Length: 269
Image (tube, rainbow, N blue to C red; front, side, top):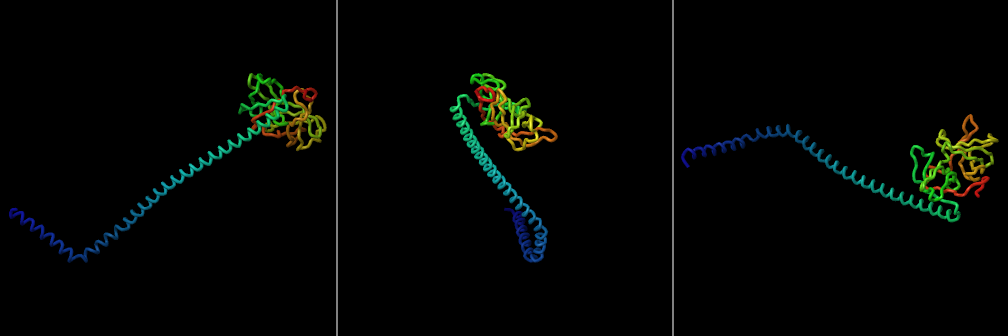
């Protein structure tokens, strides 16, 4: 090492020593400056810290919310699936019970056939529907279609394995009827009154009462006497006619009964 380098290193050492001595001697003056700097930056640091902490909490809450939402959705779907499965089981059980009753009824009376509703036109829900019985099952036009003892309609068109049913609420449907008290009249389908039935008595018009059951009169070669058409629910204002509500929900029908026997003088042959 030459003399110049030694001198240079010696000078550096002296400078460092001088700086240390100055800091030691004047530390009481530097400390207030440090405090001032700290006082200035501390609020900023605090805000940054609180903001970071808040963001961390929000992020954690979002993650937790997503997890909770996912769990809720899974539980909801699981409950919905279980409810649907239970409903399907109940519907299947009810359908099996109805079919058993129909089979028992068919065994007792060989002139009875039953059919399953296979199609409904959504534009004509109260006009027609189709069943899975036709010419191959000896179904013919004008056969009476029932549910229990309630008139549903009649067969109007027959194909090989399908039959078209005109419903009792169809505007073209007409059946000779009477009240429970024996007042004769005509029942017809009617769209104007929410797809229900209109009963027009022929005699003793003012004696008809709301709440009476309308039944088939037997004055027909199609409908035997005593079948239920519906129940009178209202009198039409300014007219001697009555609104009749079918006693069963026609839209929810799954199966129907067909009477294959002919009618003469209101009696089954």
